Image (cartoon, rainbow, N blue to C red):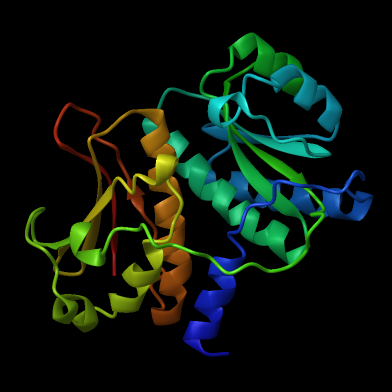
Length: 269
């Protein structure tokens, strides 16, 4: 299968589902999901984060209606997956968002739709009651279930930044040219990576290419929401980079400060 076909299929799988069938997840699918989660925890670190699957969707919806989601608009689903961060390390949030995106890929293969839900404004006591946990803090949710509309939709992204606005060579401000990217095999990867979702479609990520290193920064850092943005774009780059065998792992060491550009992570080409 050609690179363009693989890329197209990957991007289609990132489409959110907001309308779910009124039916529970099948036992076999829940068992598969548990195995996927166990694998993610081994890779990401059991001391840093956990994933909680709540199959009582009605309980979660009633608890969070009017509180979670953009402007309090809660998505109703038969089940929810919560990302629970177990410490205060910003890197754990980055890794958690990366893991959620990896889980989304597997859910798509199973025919299970999903939609991100923000819970930044929800009180801890409410989240704990909905998901029955006593350690850590739930930072985001996925509504999950079988989609009412199974039609594969094409993405429409007319408002996304051009590559020259977020990819630089050697230092921020020095725009990477097409030749710079082509020499590294990154031209198509960044062309598609700019379609990655981010809070309010702000696209806060900035990349600096230094020799064979990719450095990720966040412009005008606004806190936890940008750490989630970072984890998502990192997963996009890794998945799209499979076409050029870009298999190195990210070295995640956020340097949180008041600088215009906050360093998050880097990886070798």
